[in-house]
Every structure is written in C-alpha cells, then in structure tokens.
Length: 156
Image (cartoon, rainbow, N blue to C red; front, side):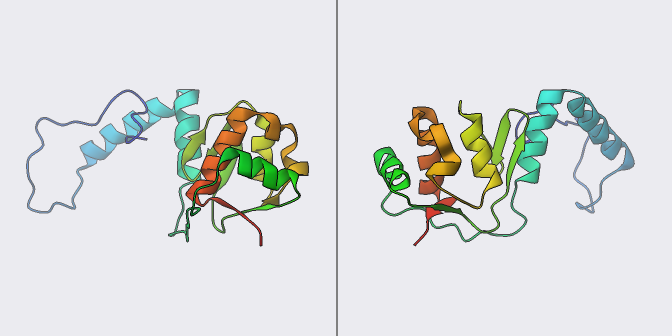
C-alpha cells in the first residue's frame, strides 16, 4: 500500500527518535498506521489496487526463466494460430477483479477483458481460449511481454 503511494499520505513522525530496541513499535505508532490503512480502504480504487497487488505477490521464490531470445509479437501470434499452447509458470498468482487484472503483483492494462480472463482462468491455453485477443495489438503486446518475462511459456 505504501510503496504504491496509495491513500495519498505517508506515515511520518517528526518526534520519532532512534530507539534502544529498533524492533519495537509503540502503540500510538501502530494506531496512526491503522488509521492510514482504514482511510485507504475506504477508497474503492485504491483498495482494489492494493488487494490485487497483495494477493498476487508470490509467497515463495518462483523459478522464472525469461524467454531467451525474447519473442516478437508476430512470432507469438503465429505460434498460437499454429496450434501451440502456452503454460502458466507454476506458482504464478493471477487475479481478475471486475475490469482489473493482476499478474505477479502487477496490474495489467489492456482492452481485451475476454483474453485477459483466459490468462487468469487457464493454466494452459491456446488460440481457442484467447479468441479475438490475438487480433488485438494491445493484448498481443501484453501477452508477449508476459512470455518474455517468463510468466508464460510455450509447451514442448
């Protein structure tokens, strides 16, 4: 929440001094932070952004292998139209909330909700699941980026 600057306010305490025990948090500090968090969750868009990012943050290190060499968008479309399937990286967290999509704590921006829903729904997918998304340049660009980052890979 704080790293994404949600809520429009940062915790600060001008009277805070170095402590003998740096792991100690005072009750009043915790209460101020709780108040900030409550204010943030009252803002639906801020809360949705935080929740999507938080829930899709991996709980353990993933075995991410970026595509080498990176794929070009045309290669991705040709492979999928040719019948190849994409698998989702094991342990990768994805989420669909309303019109927002999150992958690995990042919100995706694209105009093809149906194709993004398929990315969230299926661990293995191809042309049939992605449908008209393969004709959408914005979606193809997003998909190619996810493949090149190692979040999706072509099945062998």
